[in-house]
Length: 123
Image (cartoon, rainbow, N blue to C red; front, side):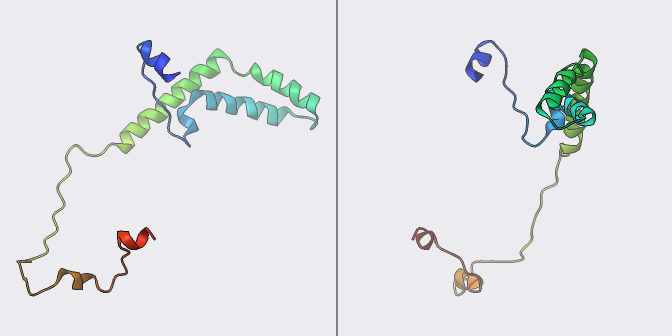
């Protein structure tokens, strides 16, 4: 399906998982579910079907337009809140004068740590 869309000159943009507020259909579905939940009189299959049929009428042009506007507002707010500053100062850690002390074995710095070598991890 993605190839057909691209071949038609469009771009496929995926919504991030776990963010139904960015998807207008999820918001419209929420309106419909609230209608069913608040109007369900008896917990029978017939009553549930009747409320679901009524809920379809909740998906009006105005509800869809509001859901799209709301999703776009959420998206705009995410773009603003997630942006990093244009310039980030470098982080420099000064470890002092390390030099080339050949008498000192670099491995001794890590003697207290239990590292697993690649060979040991493969066993």
